[in-house]
Amino acid sequence: MLQRISKYFSNSTKLALLNAILIGVLIALNTYFQAFCIPTNWTIVLLVICFTNTIIYPLVKNNKKLHLLTSFINGITLFVFIYCVIFLEHMNLTGLLLLIAAGSGVVVFIPHFFIVQLLWRNLIRPTSTLSRKYFLTAILICTGIVFYIGHQYKEAITSIESFEQSNFKELDKSFMTEKILGMHFIYHTRYCFFDGWRPPKHEPILVIGMWLNNRYDPLSVDLKTRLELYKKFFPNRKYKFSCSCAIEYSNVYHSSYFWK
Image (cartoon, rainbow, N blue to C red; front, side, top):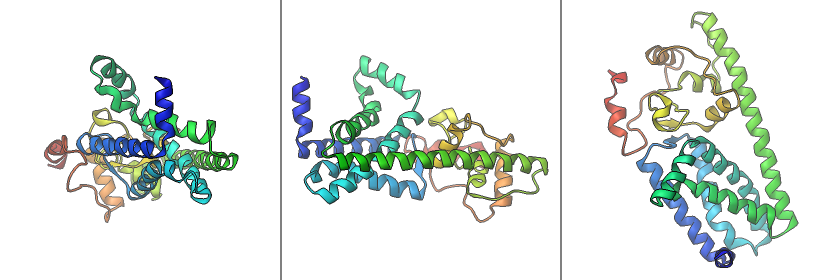
């Protein structure tokens, strides 16, 4: 059995086709169910690059220049799938139970499959030592970015605390304080209903910042107050969207008492 699997994955065309199918399944599921919802613009660009690279990288292993580029992008993609696994946290156990009971839980482990695949083909059994270095370089850069995000969120916590001390009259407006102020009605921070009220936008920078700061939301106000503060300090920013991201939950978003 293991030999058959190994033989299958050694075929570049078959692996590329399998990756394309699995990524298609992930996109279809996210369109119907609320998982990552509407990605922010930079996230969409990143996902297009990473998903496309995941499909084509097995096909270019004989092209040295392209292979080195795909190895570098694979290092970034590894972080994307690790992020997915962490964000879906509780679904890992649920997926395991569904896998045992009905087999349908296998879809939960698609990101896990990609993580193993990328590590195996780029770190454990790379085509060349140089491609491994490109892969590790991307991982190192992403690690630095992640810790920088955590630092920026920590600084934003201080800004929000000062904002509360000024009785909500003075706000140090920045990328991160806008995300924090828009949290829970524009930006969601956890999977589905575990966020409390389902916002439509997914901003990984905000989520990572929270993860590295004990999931700490520094602004302790109700949603209505939060919305009024957001409209006051970011009057030109959109706060309600034409639809929520998932087909299954779109009516819940539009009919919520929050907008009345």
